Image (tube, rainbow, N blue to C red; front, side):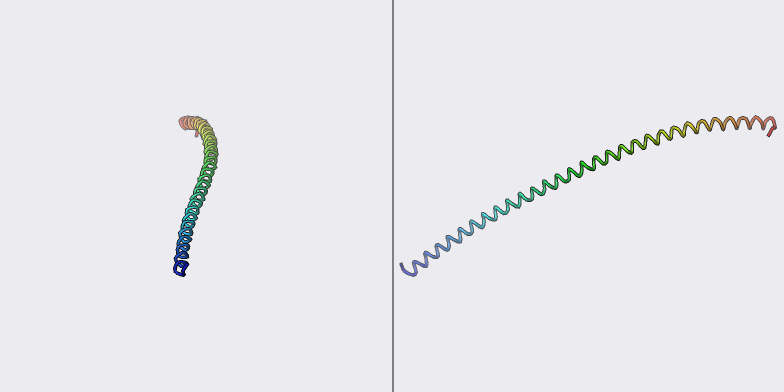
Length: 110
């Protein structure tokens, strides 16, 4: 075999190795892309789960606040009712005193 033939064989082997290296590199790139996609999907799922848990927790807190507000409203409505009743009683007493005062004025007692 001549030097020229050996050189051609080596060039062919180098070209084959380059092609093999290129193929392996592309395969590794594809595998890396797939792993990155899986990682992104995993973190998206984690984020979704965290959002759902966050919203569930806040829904519970909102329900508790609503319940507390309803209790407070009922308490205030009861108090308001009691005050209205007391106010009515006081108005009745005041009216009686005003009637007596008017009566005494008419009689010139006052």
